[in-house]
Length: 192
Image 1: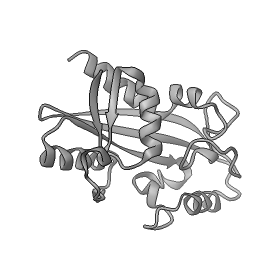
Image 2: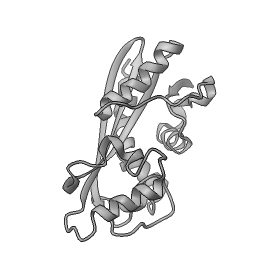
Image 3: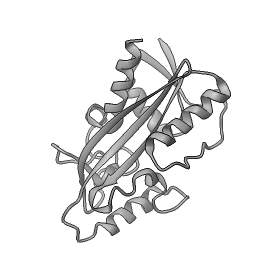
Image 4: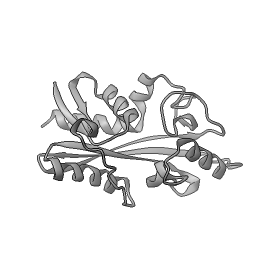
């Protein structure tokens, strides 16, 4: 089984990505290599932030790795929260505060269409590659469900009647933005 370094401290993301990857790769994260610092995400695009994380680790450890950045992009909010998804309500990164701010800004708004967009940046033998996945859907008026993480309780993917937080993990891991981008990355790796 091949090992891959996923540039994250987020255990929810690690578990979700490992479930999608399955047994073809054993994922390691930043804790496994003793990297405890936060990597800044100062850029204005998901692509640049994902690359920043991967480059930081590649420069320091010289290991093949991949990183991701994900944004919730709400149509009537001109793509907000977007690159600020995790910090929408402030630098303290409180999920409930973020959800409350989104719901407050959408109060009374009939158009609740949105998308989750994930970009994975892979550095393989010094070469950089990007992979994108998009899940379209709508934002609910109240949180629903206890599964998932982040904005999952307020996002209903197109073609479904339940939020990501209500859907079984196996379903979410088959249709999510992160799953779609990751499948492209894995297909690429298999062709190398």
